Length: 225
Length: 47
Image 1 (cartoon, each protein chain N blue to C red):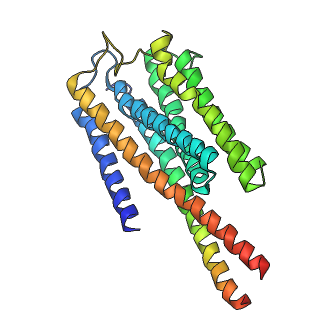
Image 2 (image 1 turned 135 degrees about the horizontal axis):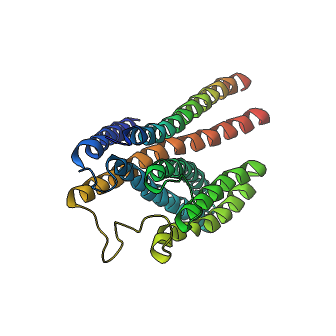
Image 3 (image 1 turned 45 degrees about the vertical axis):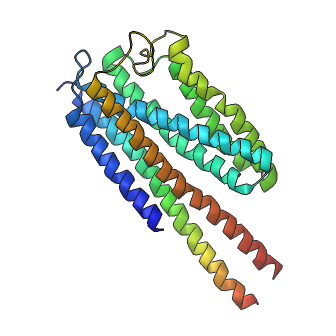
């Protein structure tokens, strides 16, 4: 409990520090102006969301291999946290796009693959509600989760492989890309903050799964008596 | 400060989603904890 409170306090403090850095430390971008400040939150949340889906993928693989419930709990936990992140990415992106592109949305490679990613993990959660038997539910959703993760590298590399509407990568984009040093520091600080915040959400959400398991055990015990 | 309202909208909506998600976790945790307590109290009576 103390560790959870400590993690929550650290995550909250970091979020406040990141908001301060985004608005008061990062310089205003010359072409786009103040709207570019959405980038720090939008891109950092996208990176954290992809990392959370990677943890979900690891949980799914481990469940298929070892068939231990804790890996199923990790999978569903990370799927929910990842969906929250990608929902934010899909909303903040269009808010940035309207003043810059003149449109909220277009079906380009990055936007479409991200939307498909969101749909895949929503399907993962829906699939779990359709199967009653716990072992079968865990196995089928783990297999589906492994399949869903295939879209994550596609999302990441889409702006490297295809030149469509979404801006080319400014971080790890090769020659000709890059950020102002202060912008870069602020961005990577945001990436760290979003990872810590997602770790906090994962810990809290995992407890829900553990408690659900306890309730099931106690109910079964009560039925026997 | 052109588009400052859009920047604030993006941050408020984004953190709003995280906040609502966190509240749903807190609510689910509280419901399940009370269910665990109820079942634990019920079991010794049955014994």
